[in-house]
Length: 168
Image (cartoon, rainbow, N blue to C red):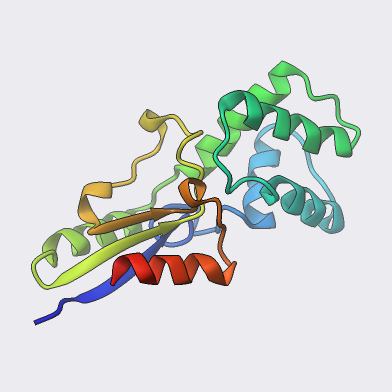
């Protein structure tokens, strides 16, 4: 008998700040707010688009810092080392807030391992978030599919096709 497969979208379901998707303007609004920067709606959309442009590629810390610098320069904000460091810390803080509902979902996954396969699908660039700052219970998932390791981001249809090919 084949087990059913349930797919969790990390960054929107199990992880997130009040389940705000990590590639959304709302997410970046919370990150920027923590470092004292605010944009009007139009510029927040532009900031989000620019930041997400390369965020699903594998980047070293140096490349990620350069990417962050370029986004701030676009908005004529001096990208000091302190600003970049504060942005990265705020990004990690907002992206790793796990609420009690998420813990209940993890408990559900643990309790149903024998009957269901669970999969992780994520746009989170796990390569750049320090391991101690992110609490993804990867051991609970039969398959883990991270776009940062594939170079394809949701909602690009190719990520779902690749995921489906690998999962089945």
